[in-house]
Length: 248
Image 1 (cartoon, rainbow, N blue to C red):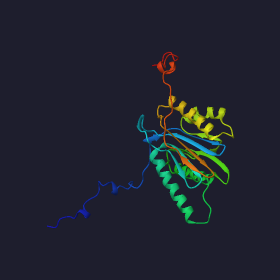
Image 2: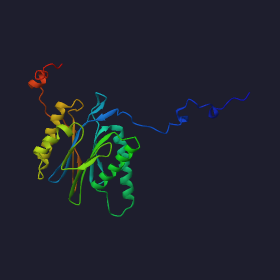
Image 3: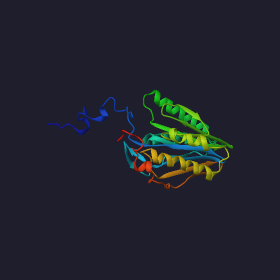
Image 4: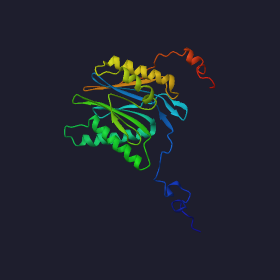
């Protein structure tokens, strides 16, 4: 009696045999990062993000880097789904590699990369398979500073300061009051730390482990993580329901 070889065995229950096996959708973000903030300062662009990665409402990871260098002239920061951000970084690696292969002496600037990301995010949205991220893209090329943002459905704009997540609600008012065009590096960092401290107090997904990055015409630096000095003995924190009658 001839035995059936493994290669010819029925595969009705195999995932590979499913007609939908090649189609995958991120329907709900799983591991997410919160706010990223960027601003222009006198010499270039500053960007900050914490290093938390939340699994639902649980802060599962505390060493997730969400700011990366792109090419020679740009920095990218992302909030939202971490795995989708990794996919975006792969897209950008391919883009920069393809550009370098032309060997024509030119290189992609921050505006070029921002325009590319806008098209990617809008294209994925139209396929009902969005990348669940809000992105900040900043850089300096030929003396021109550039800072822009794009969200998961392709809505985008440029500004002197931008933020994602809760930062768009809680940090932007601070930036509108305190930002100016001739900020020094130290002043810019001080403003970003003030914004991140407010977010740490108010955003449950924020962690007290920050990473700051800067980019100028000549240099790109992503600094090691560090913690902010915080104060938790304020009356509002000790008895948060005192000013909200009827709350828990």
